[in-house]
Image 1: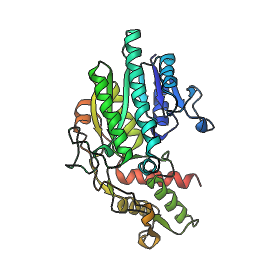
Image 2: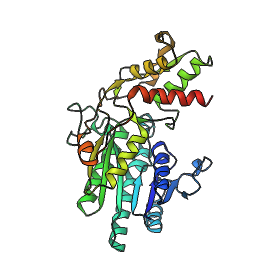
Image 3: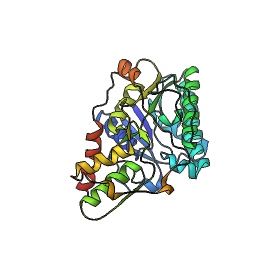
Image 4: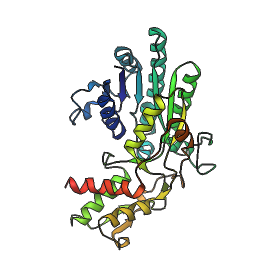
Length: 317
């Protein structure tokens, strides 16, 4: 039985990953912030109360005590909008903490003489305004947000640690959604409000840029890609994406159609306050490498993804 350490264990991706690893029979340790301890956590999860913004010695010490075979660093600031509001915290939590964990994993490997594998999730936001579309692992990195810049920093550091003998897998994740996505994200805002409108509890959906286009996938599919990447024979970087671009407008339309509302334009209002200072216009990924080397393919279509999220909102009413 191998030992896995998961940061961000209560987040969207972390919760799906923890459930999978426990089902496989691993000893799973989860790094959880104090404010997230009140939620429902799996009984078999070994919980460690610690924030990624903690002192470097505390994070490194946790890696030493747990002595994981697999380390999945899924914690961090997950909102591009929040990164504009607090770029310093974003850099500490999603950048500096990643460096500490990578360094601690390599030092642990050297001391115990047994391989430690690290999964560092990157983001399509590292490409910013991409030089090409679709993007792949060779696309130039030029972020246009604090979130993207921090993710790019951690992505490059994972590559440097790989050159020093640490098995690091970096998955460049495109937008991936589920009912576990926090309600502050535009996708959850859309699905929760559409469900409320269908139930007569709301009469308007207020959004920002409806023209922003994204490559949206199903979160459990992307967690599967993470596991495949970390357990592959060779370390590497992998774009994880569906290869299909849809606009926020498309997402809204799919949600309303699922509840039987076709004439939905009258119910949507655009508020400039919700438009980001810089918003990449088109991010769509080419996951050929993940398909050919990892055998990974997305299993949930765009319309089905939206429908599942709307249904979850309605079931929770």
